[in-house]
Image (cartoon, rainbow, N blue to C red):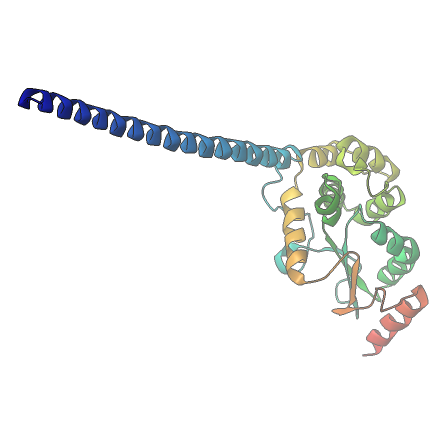
Length: 258
């Protein structure tokens, strides 16, 4: 074989090797771009979900991103709505969710006694509004109802509207209280509540951020469920701590005696 032929074959082999290297590099670039494209697609989908979730929260109330407490809120961070006289000898703390069936059971049995003790100056009540059912079953009814109750507090009619919400509580799986129109219609059952100011407060979600802040505080507290009921900081209601209206009266009387 002549030197010229050997050089021609070597050059052909070299060109083939070079082409293979180029093809290999091109394939690697395609795989890399494909992976990048997949990552971008995943991020785009995740971003879409994030925007949707954020929009859903925003749609529940136009101004609810700030934690604006209702008028007269008390306690750490202004997270409690008070009922009864300041300086009463006993304080009942109630963590509740307006969609929670257990909370309705507590209200059905105890609301008359609780209101009487508060009205007579024997006990002060501090209500903390949370949104457990929204998290467990989905929806926004817990937050919407709590915001509406806070709007009622602004109008000085929290307790009456609070009791109306429990009397008309929907089934746990039905997110009826997610509808502002329903909450506003229920305000007709409280004389003088359904005003333009109340309707604007409900529709704008003025206290949504405050409700979420209250719910986050409840999560940090370590309490397992709603309702959580404390008398002077001690849990008094639950499966292992049976309670009756008369027993509550005795406990409050004992607290007054010191």
